[in-house]
Image (cartoon, rainbow, N blue to C red; front, side, top):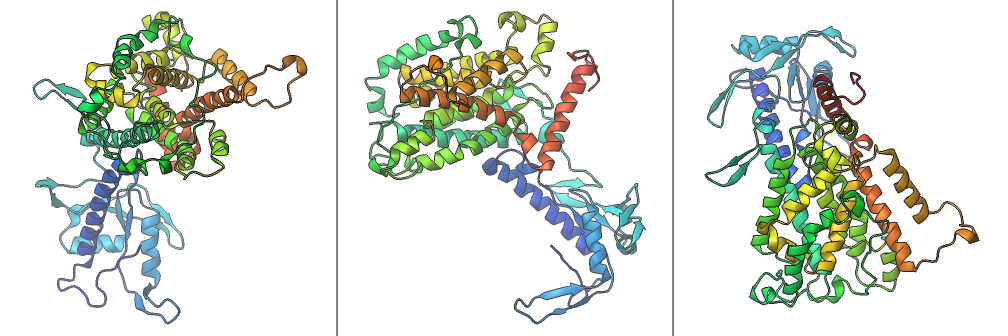
Length: 516
């Protein structure tokens, strides 16, 4: 975009460069606010978007050219030089030429200027000395002086604390936006779960948290669920022992939103108590993440966003109206239902809770108590599941659990999805990787099995097997999705991973013993 000051008539005070500098500053600050707010609706990394500005001063030719799309245009070398100032600048900075800098000095604003340390090579201009402009301003009642970089102190470095007086968790502003986004995502997915549940939707268009629902016949099952399910952690000795080759998906039922009184999930109104419990749960999860450069809450949110994108084709299929091809659609998505969707995003959110910032191999070398507890396999992953599951079963989230999984069977399946998915994020363990690859080959054989190898399975069992392994590979892909995204995102997360590895090396906790 191009903006110009002094056309068609010059400003009264003649300080065109000063006016344009303030305009660039205001555009930058407003855009920064918009990008931060968008992070709540669009997800992680949105606040990383930033503008850059370039300025030059001089004479131009201006006019409206005839044609199919007549518009006011500027021509001349000054326009080209201003474009070079922008393209050779840096994000969140305002760069100007020597000519513009001289105009700013004449206006008595030389303190706004900071010479760029290195000369820039401008196409058609050669080497040029340029300047960074930071106009002073009053912003929210505080004087803003000369700044050349975006302030991040209040954004990222606020210590997570628990305010004993107000009984609230205090987190950074960026974390607050990520918490809001994750909460909205889980609320939308929970509505889909409620909508898909047979005989659980009424014309009242509200979720059953009223008195009638509390007297539902499932109450006995819910009580058993609360008393017994947390003990699943120790059934097989460790979380890893609970991993199953096949997780049961719901059988095909020719029933969808078109046949219900509620046409879609947006028409469902969750009780505010459930919303508050989801937000509180996400907030506590954020506080359970350590201050690691890479394995942190923002990474978990990024994985959740990638998981949502991978699941979106399945979501769009499930939102279709009833047709004779319902069965084909069901088989096409391997029977993956809304509860599975919720579980996948839930797993992305909690999969690195309490991550120590070093690989599992280092914990084994250090004879960490966690390594002994989890038998030196998928140590960080098992620890994350245990912490998250114990948190999820706090009494504070009782209504959330009842709405998500009103029966023990549903809660058991939810638990199994959590275990399998989080364990799949350990991609460095050779033995576990080979087991997953073998299960993939079994679900999607590359060749026709020999007659001696044939094992008869029902169509539903085959579908369940495919769904199980596909879910595991989706969260694996989401966990490293930054390597397949925009170059800016790739560099950002690879830099953070390097910083985390280098920090471990400096602390003498590098499993390889080499400086990364």
